[in-house]
Image (cartoon, rainbow over all chains, first blue to last red; front, side, top):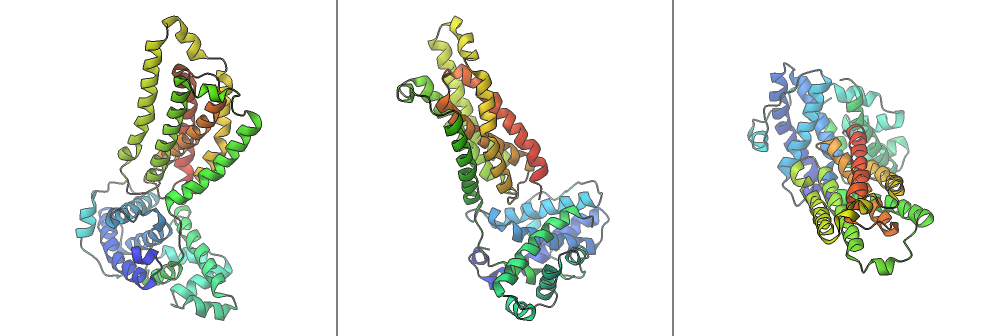
Length: 172
Length: 212
């Protein structure tokens, strides 16, 4: 994460890809206890990754990284259960359990993200779709849309922030 | 949508540098404090006998209490803006200004005759004190709450309350420079409830505005 915050996007990519299965394990176990399925868990994983990203400045880099990740994931998990109208009893309560818990590979697709992206404004939606689903780079998207790369990045940044907020507002 | 696809978008956005929470709070305090300071200078101003007042223990104690409160509340706010922080530890420094006030009240009770206590506690201008502390803290409280929306507080209400304490201590520090009521009894009876009310306001606002 330190490297990612300094701007090493390769390190950031590796970190998020390694965190995803851990988060999936945690979300999967909790949601299964509330009789919710694996695709719901994938939604929680995606929302949590987005929150980790949008709130990364709240991590004090002199503090351990695990408890911070756990705290963000826990908040998003509770939020999700509440939105899905479940009574909350989160049994897992410490970081050790999150980190020691089994990791899960991706089997499902999330549904929330797609629905929320569809609600973004025209340009922002095009940019998010091109970069996420098609895997284009900011430069490629800039050329395709006739924008500067900087403008694409600004629009992407705004879009991700409104996406993170939209999870809260919209029913899943 | 696949999680790897979301990660693509996040990583592309990920190289933008972001300000730390303490840096954001410093900016918010500078803006909110600037507005409060300008209002204070325009409407109230520092008492004319400030040089003499600084020689008295009561005035110094009053200023020390509000300043220590300001520091403690700032620390608590920065801590409570983070998700993984132990709430009790984050609030612990607030005992410091409370202890200072207790000490000052005790020395006032020991050093002054009992029949002067009531007059000193009631003071000469309690209504202005309540009004000024409340009004001067509006701008800092707003700027702090807006800034804290970028935080990730475990408890939005607690973070809001800390912001209220911080805004209130800032306003109280300013007002202390104007106010002629220096007795610790007055500070306990009027400053403290004014600041407590701001903490409650902050908690109520925070529990709505600071959810993430």
